[in-house]
Length: 284
Image (tube, rainbow, N blue to C red):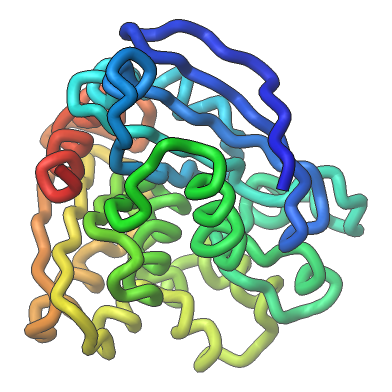
């Protein structure tokens, strides 16, 4: 799988890069960001890798430009990868009709319903193809991977970890869509990508996955702004995930509630350092 370097900017003595490549899994050209810390560029240290999944309407650019994560990735010596949120430019009827379905709204699942099933295989892209691509082309430690994300991407991070025991050594989520089968966003996406079988929906829902998870113990770090309008509108439902995890001896949770904070990147930028320090502790 050949990579094309689109840009590279010096940042906190490291480099923020953007690459593109053709994804065989998604059937289209995809872009992703890579932050290379000075530990690698200056000292040739092979580094742990941290994957970040963005939320609805985002591209690969939002996190790079708004989170301020680079200073912390530089401090802790982490390579940070952030892919796009969906396949692009496929000309599927309806892919551009709404912000919460189609382009920019993959929900990081593998679609089974036509016409989405041919290309909307983001779960396999994130957990398999992209992982292989990074392992083959960047100086990462393959056994030291973390994953985190925001909103739809928080949902994505949680299901990637819960459905792949042992693949990630750390996982956290900002304001995740924690129980999509019970919220309007999730119901719209799952019906469109998966059809009407709600038992199939549960296989892509972190709350239901937490109920049945039985593999190696894992800790879930959940972060939530208390003034998040989507929390109040019952789109996120972290309380359902926390309740499910509390009765499972294989899962532990950390739940941070942030008074006064909303759903925006101002919130993420405020606490991104804490999250990266958390991942660094587990990965280093």
